[in-house]
Image (cartoon, rainbow, N blue to C red; front, side, top):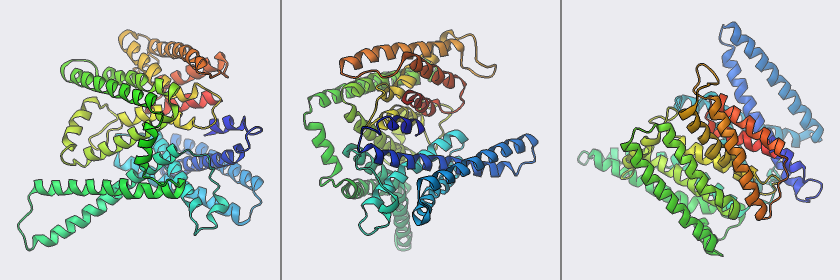
Length: 484
């Protein structure tokens, strides 16, 4: 967020609409920071219950950081606003993000302890809170009954229709579990009443009936909830799916060729790698890195030639992943068991029987830098941050380190110096090729090679040392360094 703010500040003197977008992004930055500080404060409160001296010392330093942040936050808003009801309303709105982040991270760490560390939980919780805070802000700003909402929430009118469609679909899918569980409870209650007068329901029939409830709930969300929200926020008069089809088939030659290319690559790679996973002794980590290379083949041409269409494709893929994961977790008939068997071939130690996150982290690692680069972007390589760091840097570091690595960064870790060096070299080589391709498309590299080399080196060193989910952290760090 801070890197994006710095990037947008470079166009403020020339763009008349830049001030409003900058102000809204500034508010989102404070929402993210308050979410993180609230979670840190909650964590420190738990640490203070321990009698360990080292932990107590750590909690003191952390408490000092929290106090300094709060002072900075209050000073900023006192200087930026005139005080009064408006400032209090804004502060209250932002503090709600912090409370929601604490509640969400508690739920994540309790329900999925093997899938996420504290840092990963913080990233997911703060990201979800800010994303849905943005949805709430855009909804409130369009509500005619609330005249006060527009007083403190000024959403820029520059959001594209593609971004609105993606937000609407994701909003519906995140609300789907609530609708499904509620409908299922009502159905079970009704059947329980009926059992007094009828025969005992067979387990298989009961499972199929529950699956029918899921599919009906999914249809309700996609056919009614999603179009209602997109019509409210963006004024779309047609269903989002109809809008997507119109978008695909208008001036569609390049997009359709790209879709055919994607389908071909995905089908070949899934069929090939799934058979390898069942028949060979290839290490699972290397098998998963092959999918990183497939991501490079799929996404790189689209970023150059159809960047807006790629935004839409990322959203569609993420929505599809969410639906398939719900079907797998709830064992929805008839696909639940089949999807579970297929996905189980590519899991690692971060995944569990409850939740498989590897494919989500790879997709979001490639998508987030591209989504965040929408609109003004004076760093042509920034949208490629996820593809370069994961698809090329992380993959080459793992493969070379696994096959030829001797010198380890630490005695307990598996990352090697040879692997990191290979990752840095491969990313810089890919950047040189991309610069040439982008120059032929009219882009101008506004970044010195020295700063680019520094960004690549720092990102790959972080990949070597971090114990967090590198698919999630490395692309965001690389993107931030490229934006500066």
